Amino acid sequence: METLLELIRYFIIAIDVSGGTRILYCIVRIMSSPNELNNYVKKIINVLIFLVLANTVLGTAIVIHNYFK
Image (tube, rainbow, N blue to C red; front, side, top):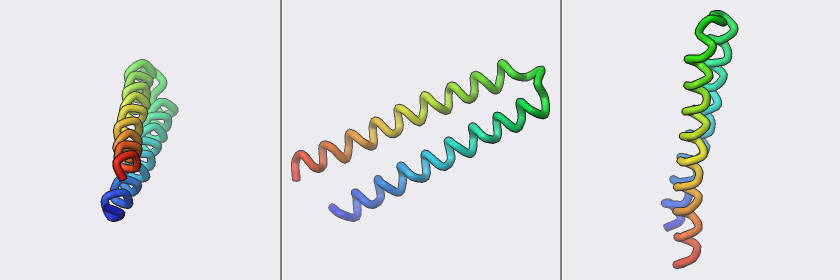
């Protein structure tokens, strides 16, 4: 079961890093093309929503695992 917890932790790290990278990419694209601001702001909001949901689900999995341990 310890392997499962390590795997979940690695998924959380990978999700956070990829989400941060996507947000940084959108910010760079906004700087290079300001007329597409609305499109990239929507993409940033979608990434933030995904990050919150993904971390909540994986965090809940850890809590449930520790509860039934």
